[in-house]
Image: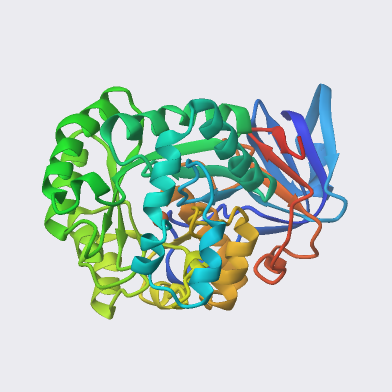
Length: 417
Ligand code: FE
């Protein structure tokens, strides 16, 4: 008999995502491993049993003091994994919106004091306490929308000590919010203004000074780079990512977002964990990413937020056999903390089915974030889950602004707190 200290009952449907290879591709992305009229039991923060409610009494014994939670006929899904965020920054850029909607170019917005460098100024100037407070607000909001694991990139300091300072905030942020955070070093988010025209020198500092410190202090699991004309070239990106690989970090690439950058091909060549954005990626890029087994992290909210709106090509990537994952890309440029909203955008703009979107937001996003156990509800895995007052899990993607009634990470309730 299995013993448990947490039992979730009266679940109309649970999506376990239990079966199949990780990450999922093609038709396997539509297999949710549903169990109907179900219960879920956990012990010590780990799932110990998932099955039909009618089998529960003979399979699971509750320990004295165990908690029983009713899902009240709602659905249970694995806690979302947000595979791509820029959640650590200070300030906001709401003032840009009137310019954006009037059709101002990025250069024009930058001239008027906006754009990425405005956030760099605010972030450099912010105290540790302010950065923590503002970032914590966002991460808690992500958790309240069902995310239990969140990838967080640095990238708004753009100097070696500043980037390390942002990454050093992450453990505190994770602890305070009660979620798992996977830190990514994105010192190469843009060339700092003071190094304009000297990108090579900046990359050199990142390779010589930042990456060794990141590896030594274990400040990040991944290194990412904004590989795009006007940011970092393929050659500069490759130098940085090869140095990161040599230090034992995983690598990711911001690729083909505004223009064809060659970043997707670089990701395939290096066997990167993921290539992200990919709005302009070609058929050949998709073929290469599929062959190399690189996960495509799709960020449909960012495509939506851009004034030159492009739909996120989620469907094309799934059809090409590329594992597809989802993220909010939460940043001052597209401030989104809701994974259910991202699922809805992946369905309505990206043309995924709700089942594919849920797979992309859970098991595939976990893979893209280097989390082998997250994104599924299987015995032995973490008891990370969200309860929604929905009639079916596939209503995620249909209900744009679904909010979970409860979110648990490792068997502990993180939202509402
Ligand atoms: Fe990004």
